[in-house]
Image (cartoon, rainbow, N blue to C red; front, side):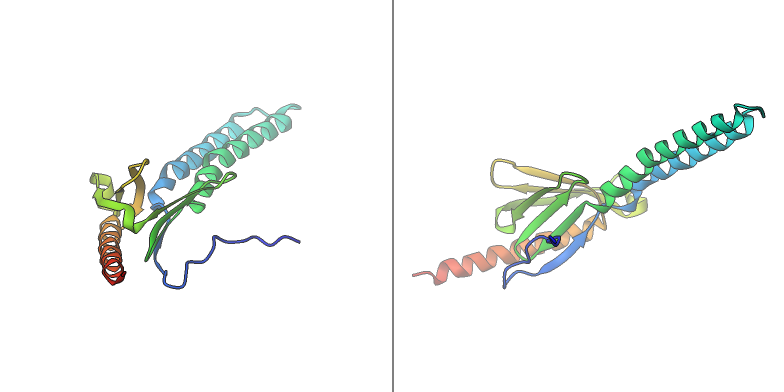
Length: 175
């Protein structure tokens, strides 16, 4: 039997500093739609007149409501659950995808700028967008709905500086 394998562990001198997933606010719309679907289904169940076809009609309404709930609630929850942002002492790792997994690793030594943006709702909820610019062909990556985005930005910036100092020391020690 095949065992599920996690992403390879970091190298000996690499360690996990911060692991995040998108802020819970990404689920608000899904929860509101779910409440609306349940309310509409309950109203439809009450409105259906009694009769021989009432049982079938109620089953159809229930089936449609359940299908709508699965699509409007489960997909965003799974997307939220399967998206992770990991900051190690050597790289920024982004993993996402429900069926098809995607991953992107950016070495800290390639990061040239780290900034954040917070709108009014983000400020209330303590989240924001983290913008990471890197040298290379992809240039910029925007991580949306990051919880405690200012802390994440400061931590990433500090680690980028530490990595640059480490690389400079190693370069000076080379013959």
